[in-house]
Length: 25
Image (cartoon, rainbow, N blue to C red; front, side):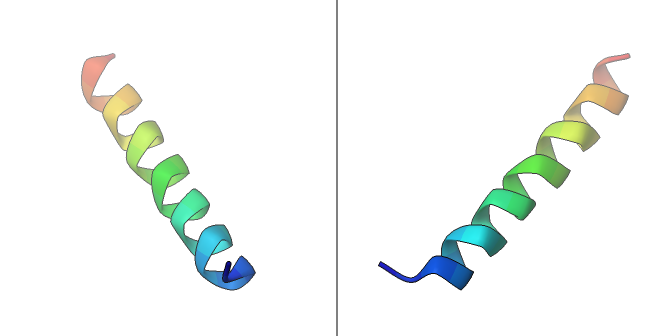
C-alpha cells in the first residue's frame, strides 16, 4: 500500500469533514 497516498487521502478526508462541520454549524 502507498503510504503517501494514504496520508493525502486522510488529509483530504479531514479537510472535507471540517468543511462539512462549518456548513452544518
